[in-house]
Length: 349
Image (cartoon, rainbow, N blue to C red):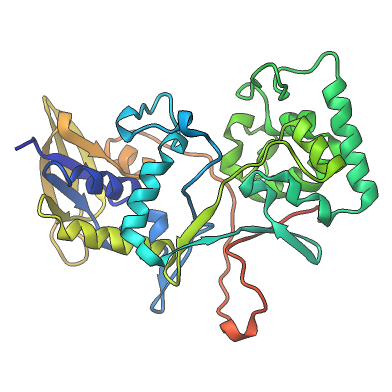
């Protein structure tokens, strides 16, 4: 039998790694069941599990067959999850069954709402919400950007890739969208999330739910009402369960797998290496005593949050954080005319 894989942590990534590996080899999973799923597990309050932010699944993209890859080709230095969407979708569908439903995040401008241009990357949903003179101004600005004889390196153009890592998000947005669209859409949304958003590297824009659109796509959307590029990025969740329900199904599947063994542990308190071994000291979950584990370094996956892992290793770690606030309100379904999966408030003010 193959050597056991040791997975440390209860994050959604750790659980999925254990689930995938447990079909073919023994897996020893060290996790706190009370914290399973991390942020995807939600916040337990009064018998409910409240979502911590917008927790939805992206299981498909407009990429063609040539861009789809088998999971065995994954290289963390080269790939994000997009080429492996087929594998992810199959795994989720197998767990969720009929509970998997498609939903549409929305954005609101004043009293109007439409599918969210920022999350779906479909800017064509925005023009119907704006006045004709505003649409005309945005189209004119996009046309001027495309006619610019000396475009900056971070502008999207048909004949070259945009160099986004060396420029702040504000500059990249202004130089791809024009001043009007920038002020209406990206600046207000990003500004609510992070006071320092303007200097955030444009390459990290998705961490702020901030899309950057090609000037040609902006021109087509606001001049013609349609675009040559039509993104296909549907969102999914579990009906009546949300992501907490998916975490519960993953945990149930792991417990039922004969090659997977769950070791309930608390937070990781100390992490060190002694030769070919990792020595991990865990706090006890609930009333359980603390425990120590000695694991082979070459067959161990650490799937903990950076703060917990760095602190356990004695490494100072002080991340810059986005400011965000959450509020939940319980409303009877009969009192709702419409219940969006997520609503992003746009526009200045």
